[in-house]
Amino acid sequence: IHSYKVTALNEGGESFDSEILSVGRAGTDRPVVLVVNGFDRVSGPAALKDTRLEGFAWFWDQGVPDRYDMSFTGEQFAFKKKAKWQSDDRPGLGASYADYETRVIAGNTFDFPYIHGRAILKAGYTFVSCSDEALWSGGVPPENYAAVDVILGEEKATPAPRYMGKDSAEVVYFRALPKAFQDVLRGYLQKGGRLLISGAYLGSDLYQTGHEEDMRFAEEWLRFKWVTDHAVRGGAVRSVPDRMGSAYSFQFNTRLNKDIYAVESPDAIEGVHGGQTAWRYLENGFGAGVLYRGAYRLAAFGFPLETVVPAARLDRLMQNVLTFLFNDNE
Image 1: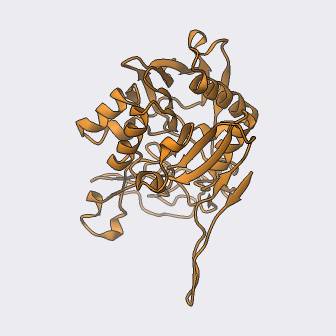
Image 2 (image 1 turned 135 degrees about the vertical axis):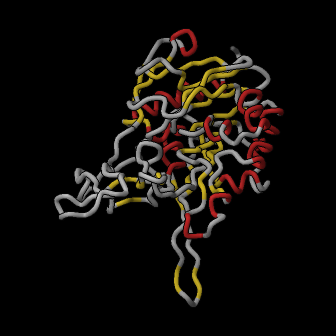
């Protein structure tokens, strides 16, 4: 596998580096999978503020560090505005646990095409990668590839920070599937494409916009109906035997660590309009992933595939998904 990133240079110095894109060749006659990196988001945690309480709403959204975070000490537990500082042992508003002091936490490391690509290559397929902007701007035509793997990670609509002004809440960044992206994927599927798509907010980000066309895209093209966010605390998933052959289980990461970001709010989704729920969360039986076989092939997951650990488990999952997408005899 070869991976690349770029920086820009001028008289003022050198820019931060770009996202990392990767390519791997399985053989001259192997189908080529296009891996699309749609996970650009970096963000602080959700904020809570009313007349009595204020602080970081870690239980809603932990945020996404830019690559790695070394400043987090632990979750906030003191939210009452009237709680005054009395001593360093009783600091009042903003007091937090200290269980993460000195620990490094992985965030968006911008290298997830490599993780997906490694599993695709292991399954015997060649892969290339691009940014989501390159796809929806028309720079990379998806129909030129045998299948498309869209990485959404923890991409979701995120209001601009308050420091940008009183109207900043009306400015939204990091929509998982903006209209331009939907249009490209719809056109690709209309031509009989093969699509793998995964992300923690795949369903919730489409349904919570309040726009009917976003919900229709989820149901009519991605063949699922969103059930809930924060579907589970643990990351255990099992396949449905009559959908994926013999049953198997795997785990995606939900704990803060230095190797891969934690998924605190996976989506529960259920198949509709011919979509079949093929994976379920072990914790409560909610739907975790959907398959569709018809005019096109589709696999959609309510959690990010790159967080499946260890790598051997992701290899098996990717092998099963690609076998489904490419098996035209079923």
